[in-house]
Length: 262
Image (tube, rainbow, N blue to C red; front, side, top):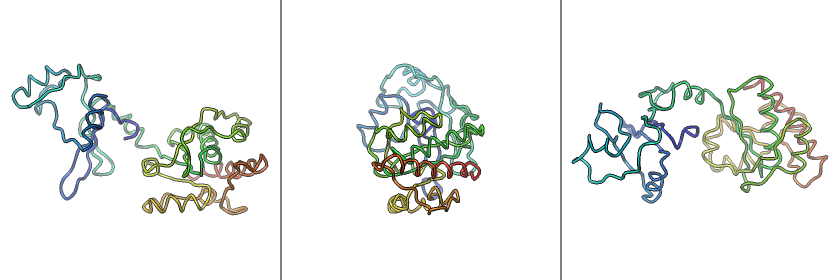
């Protein structure tokens, strides 16, 4: 859903014994503000009778529902002029129940991608290097089936990569000057197929809050089978370029092995 929300995607999920629910996050700012102010889930039917044409204006709604609704907010003509795509996620593989604005090919493309999340402490050193190097390897291999992200278990927001990281990656032909740090969130973790951390403390921090992620959480060097010098990658922050280079080489070796494992 991250790729399509807010937007014209409705997902059908199980909601308890023999029941289901359809969820949608609209792109309309007025509706989003209404949801925020209400501060509780809003249950909505369609704005037309079953089988009737799709309404794109308030007048279209009134033609079907006049006398059947108590109030109508006129937000103007709908932006897309098409219904949402409805996807049934109650089973695997998922099923398109209604074709809409988002094409089935686009949904299949996103759904087929694996998501790899690299995690360190502040998301300004090690995870930045891992993300950048892995993206480079994917490009070299011509692979577009993996989405790569990074975050930090104790990261501040919008911090740049350190000077040393930018320098080392520039030597690899990689520019990370626009990188900005972000903290680990539940959404990031739960939306990732593989979570690769630099040290055991990162693994322990995540496991304390999200024990259900155990089967997709690994030390980067352990998962990549790089056991020389142990499985942990030292935090180089404020330790000088020598330590940065050692961590960089550890990450580079692990990433080069990783590309052949997933």
